Length: 125
Image (cartoon, rainbow, N blue to C red):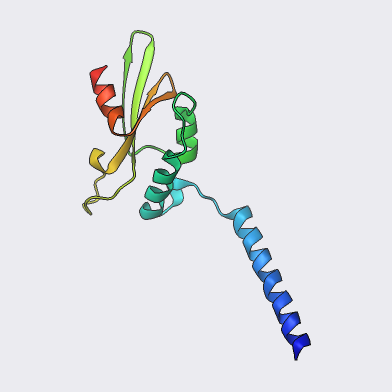
C-alpha cells in the first residue's frame, strides 16, 4: 500500500509541476485581455513600483495597455501628456471617469509625476 501511495504522490507532483510550467510559459498577463477587476488590481500594484524620471510612456503602453483617458499639450519644445489608468471602481455605469483613475504625467515621454498631483500639475502648465 505504501508503494501505491508513493507512486500516486509522484504522479500528482509531476502533473502539478507540468501544469505550473505551462501556466508560466503560456499565460499572458496583458492588461488589455484581463477582466476589469483584474486589470485594476494589476495596474494599481504595478504603479507602486514605477520610478519617476525612469518610467517612459512607451513602457506604460507596453506594460499597462492603452490608458482609459489621456490629454496632451505642447509648451515650447516640451510635450506633456497625462494618462489616466483606472485603478479603483466607483460606480457601475459603464463609463470610466477621472475619479476612478490614477493619473500619470509624462514630459517628453518620461514619467514626471504620478498620482493625485499629476493632473493638477498638468493643468497648471
